Length: 368
Image (cartoon, rainbow, N blue to C red; front, side):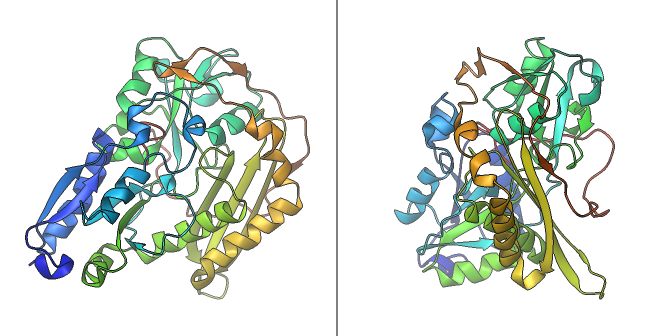
């Protein structure tokens, strides 16, 4: 049944990274395709982000977990690939297409801390690990006196820093922990008002060759239009800011019913100085069928308020180079001293996810 989809006999070859999280995510997609009657086999592909211990920014930022998978697609070694959507560069690839965006996991971040502590309960000087500039900037901006440590590695490695006493806490994406069945390790789900997620966090992208039109059509059965609209708004904002995963940029979109009873996209965006001294944060709404336009317009407003400067010298400062997964340098979270622009809208009450402990995942090593 699969031969007509690719022009070759045999099962669909699904390219995936070999980490536990990537295999779990790809397994979900493979199972969904099997349920539709397609044969699927997983093909492991090693990416630059899997083999280097350097900080993601030092490896070139966005794309370090993606390039090898796309090369395998172009070489005909695999028929489709599953990515953590937040890993994908925003530039379009004419010969490749995101044929499906499955339903999204809860995109929020979570804290995994010693002794069951929450973020507000961590003492001054507590050591908290994260490899994401977006999280570093927002944690420093809270003014809690935390020591932010750059870390890399998979979920087990990062949580291990806490259980071993090396760190007091780590921040992860909830989506990864959910997919790995590790939600019980989280001690707090972080409200987006405290730490806004990365663009496309918690979403998957199923990519294939544009020329494989039969496969493109088959994969469309896995697509969730609401998730695609939200991710389109978030990534359009990221692209218009000309930023990547190594920039302190956050965005979260939701689809909710507007005042006129018609669904609309509600998008929040934030750009912060890496030292936590300043940030600009705004929100916008617009039609679901113009989700990308909502993102571009909000990016323009953020740039008008000085976002480019925040992504400049201060954002360019190295977050730190992990050594064996944990860097040796720290910097205290600074209480913001710059001008902050408040989010003009109250957060939409439909923000997904529970308010009880549940965590999540990725970043260099394992992303979601």
